[in-house]
Length: 258
Image 1 (cartoon, rainbow, N blue to C red):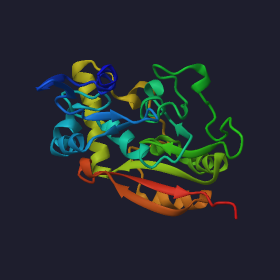
Image 2 (cartoon, rainbow, N blue to C red):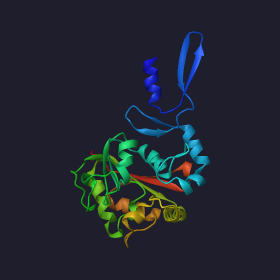
Image 3 (cartoon, rainbow, N blue to C red):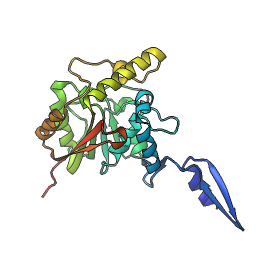
Image 4 (cartoon, one colour):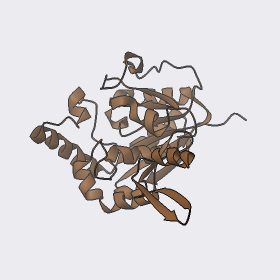
């Protein structure tokens, strides 16, 4: 009974006690929408995905970085899709506030780096020259660029992806997320005006400033061409169904040693 109680509390739900003769069953009610696996990784449940799919327009206008009302933010949604493709120790490039992807969605199995010291990042997390990662060859199983390759200066994108290839172990993968061009432009503008009108600070781009060589989105053709130039093969595109296909990821692999 005590063991069941501890396990149920970890799911962060409300409790309902059912009595059947002399047996007492303690269950979670309502069912949890996000669960933690044995490895410490967070994953959305099927129920959560259904709710997120049905409420995507509302979430796109209101939930940018923080979950609320039992719904996933756009950031959490991206993290969930990407985490399912990570194959081991991960380097998250451009990790942003509090290094959330590695600490929450990967259970701490990896390292997050950024060029800007957002809230929750230490000096050890800051890499000023992203064309030279401070890691040995073959240090990671996966490397992620979550909604940020477009913010890498155009002239540095090839060098940064080449560094990702160098730091990956043979057989490792790179994951790049990018939204539909119209959706990306719309969301950026919505977030910008949300901050202006309500005094919030959701727009990470405005906080650090957009550079001349940055863009609001990248075409698939540019992403795939740069991945191939960096050495990645077996490229795969996967859509985010709970964002109605308006966001997706590209995944490429480093050749295994034969």
